Length: 107
Image 1 (tube, one colour):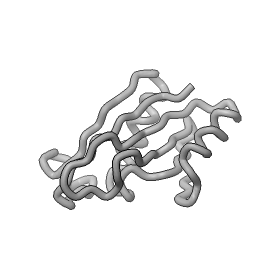
Image 2 (cartoon, one colour):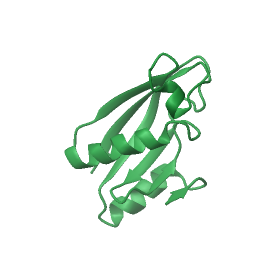
Image 3 (cartoon, helix red, strand yellow):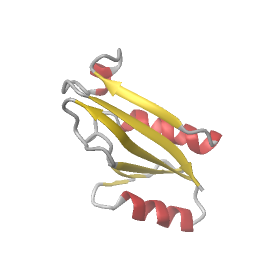
Image 4 (cartoon, rainbow, N blue to C red):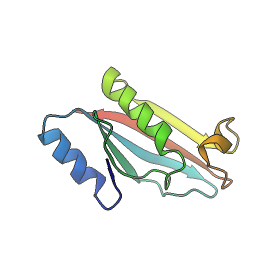
């Protein structure tokens, strides 16, 4: 379930308190036109629930997949999306910018 209005850090705290494994994705760098600023968060629970946004929707699916993999493996991931990536048009980041996202497991 996605709750656009929920603060991702509050949801992360709630899920953690309920004993769920979680991950946090954070925009760490942007270039050119990007949909969300540095410091934007997307919290993900092991159930696939998420709150917040790192892109306004265009790369969320791939970031959620990476977050679920990070929850399972415990290994952080650094992702970069932009028009120079082969997948940029597929994921919808055709605004001419780039965004770099760091995904970490929160225990």
